[in-house]
Structures are given as C-alpha cells and as structure tokens.
Length: 292
Image (cartoon, rainbow, N blue to C red):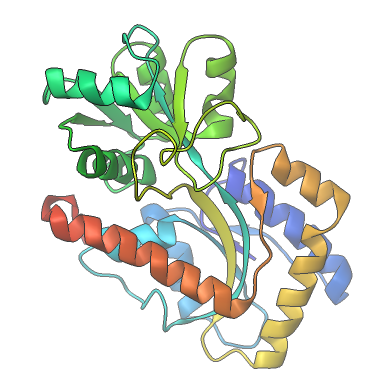
C-alpha cells in the first residue's frame, strides 16, 4: 500500500489502519510503504506504472486533484491511469486568524481585508498546497486582496500565524485545534459543505456568506488502470467493511473526518469535480501554476 507522505501524518495513519484491516480480510500481508515527495506525485506515478494485478494500491489525498490543476505537466493522467476504488473520508479545513485581528466573523475579515488591501497576509504550507489554493479561492470568492506568505511545511505555517508573522491561514482542523482551544488562534469558518464535529459552533463558509466554497482534505483508494473489475470490487467491499469497524471509525472521527466509503463511480466523479474546481481557479490566476 503506497502512502504519498512520510510517517506520522494524517494520511499515513489512515493508510496503516486500512492496511491492518485488509491484511486480515485478504489473508495476506498488506505492507504500508511511504513514498513521499513532489507533492504526492512520486507515489501516484509509481502506482500508475504498476502492474494492474491487485498487488499495489495507493491511498491518495486532495493533492491528487490539486496537482492536476497547478502543475504544468504530470508523468501520468490523473483520471485515465487509475481504477478508482472508494472515497474513504473527507475533512474540511478551518479558516483561522490571529486573535489580534479585530475580526470575529468572515464578513468582518472581508471588510478588514478590503480596508488593508494587499497588506493583510495569509500563510500556507507552500505554493501549490491546498492551504495556498484555499486562500486564493477565498480572494476570488470574497473579492479581497491578500498577500501570500508560503512556508516550507504546514507546521511552519501554523507556527508563523501563532507567532504573528501572518494573520490568516486555511488549515486542517485537527492541526490547529490545540491553538484554537488555547486562544492562540480564532476560527471563523469551516471550508466544507457541513460543519465539523470538532467545532460545531463554527459556521461553514457558505453560512458565513461566501458561496461556492467546498474544500478540504480527503482520502481515497486507487488501483492501476486495467485492474480486473473483480479485484476492484473486492478492495472496495473490504475497505467499506473496515470503515464500519469501531476502531477505524473512532480514529477517523477523532480527526474531524466524515467517513464516506463510496462506490468507484462516485469516487471518479468526486475527483473530476475537485480537479475542475481547482482548474477553474488556475485559469483565472495562471500565476498559480508551478513547475514542472
């Protein structure tokens, strides 16, 4: 099982939980292998070039769709080179601000941003990351002008906003929960279509008056294109069963994730919609494209 990130992160945790369940269900070891690098492109490329025999599976994240929109070229086709298996879970991000900002709602942030055009800063985990594109999408949807400050990692971006180096950040809920509870950050909205159970009092972007905003992290399983339908179906069924077990459900829900377990067809449509959303943004702002 290919994991497109290093050990210890959210996708690594999800993948290892599923690998353990699949090992029992399939009657043979499912070995997690971390293949980080190039914004998840290395792992995706390895799967695309693997034999379609069911012996290699990949757990992808939302970066799979973002890469299709922002990268000038990819060594694989993000749709045609894969057999979708199941959307595992979705996880909305949070729009958080430095508490020193005199804003307590998204509308107040928009008004403040318009009064401080191109001086109000938002951080990200790097150019082309989801936290970067969510900030750019917010600029378009809210008609504001923010100054982007990219960091090397998401952890660095959180450290930057807590330290007052930047004032606004889009980030996964579990990654900023501690700082919010400690009063070091203020949550203004969630980016998904529904509120997150981690912060049920925080409105969605839509509820806060910013339409057309449904973003966040997600996890899904892919096999190489050409994998026999019977193998795809077996993986799908076993993953859905695993997602129904108490320990997996508890682990995912603890991160604020919403478990899905959808069909291969639903996953394919989901990925296409996510790619289209980011491609639309990049067409509006071609400077968002990154090499290669």
